[in-house]
Length: 168
Image (cartoon, rainbow, N blue to C red):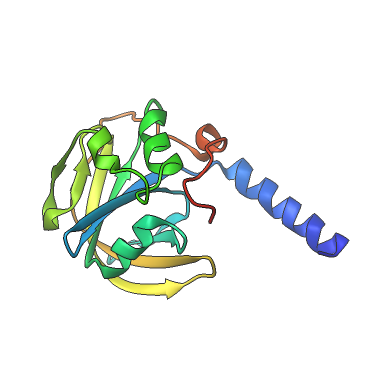
């Protein structure tokens, strides 16, 4: 990379790190398989109708299941749930069944819902968009469980040191 590109990238990375976005766990179920992963590329993208965009790495085990799925579950983690973030962020479904290591139950659309999540919503996948090394999945929220009042979400800064199960 040229010095200008490197400086721009370094500046961009610093801006994003300072934003300290919340992280979520996304779960999917399709073709008799279920999967889940920690995601950092997310955003509400419409108020009315409500829409949410989730980016899933093409290298992630969850990617294959999510590409075959019709619905996803998006789980908000509380600040104290770093061990759940580590399970879904530093482990890979290629090696372990993550759901054997946490409490969960079948939810709407038979999606795995994590019992320890502060809050969650499920939604139908409306569109998929190639975003480079991730695919953006546009979700129409359908059912949800709100977090308790004053929940502090787990943010990127607290999971930045996790070594991902797959490199993005």
